[in-house]
Image 1: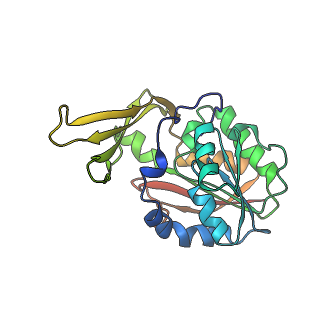
Image 2: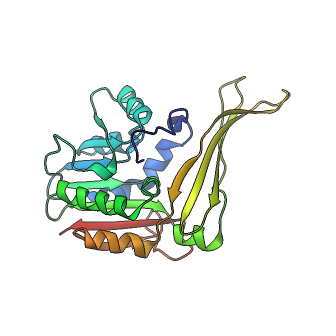
Length: 256
């Protein structure tokens, strides 16, 4: 997430909206394969959110620093892991102080589209290159905006999280409004389902966030111009090949 002066995610409790153990189990083989080839075990988790990937990678022997532009997400990560290292910083202002040369980096979870301008994308990738040792891997995952933009898709799949007894289930709804040239308004919202109550759906939180849907060719060109070599392009975090209709864009790059 970019723009640290704005915290559109302050009221969105992402830790409770995602089935993290199942997700990390699915993604673990690719995470370890992609990041385990670096010149050191020092990693940057860019757009770390509440820190789930950071904490998992620490259990695998990595020394991880998480960065996020959302102060509330960094605070959530620190509360869940008081011994971890989490930094409130913009991804377009790398390198930040006290970052020793890193042996790898990851940026997952649709963080990249929060950088909406080409100059910002260039600043992110060139700043990251300055943080990494030669040969360091960079694992980048975002939604496949080639598909989303070409089809004009407006929604992501609904997430339903069972609630505690008597509290009702939580629904996580995500809408997109297209404005042309890859520019989108993203509207995440959480609702509580209360059967028998009136109204039966209660809005808990909703935000509007500006995004930029970057196509694969745009991302690869910026990476290569910033000192990275593309090693692999995949369509999911479980390793399927990329196609124009893939769910995700996953790039494994290397600092030259």
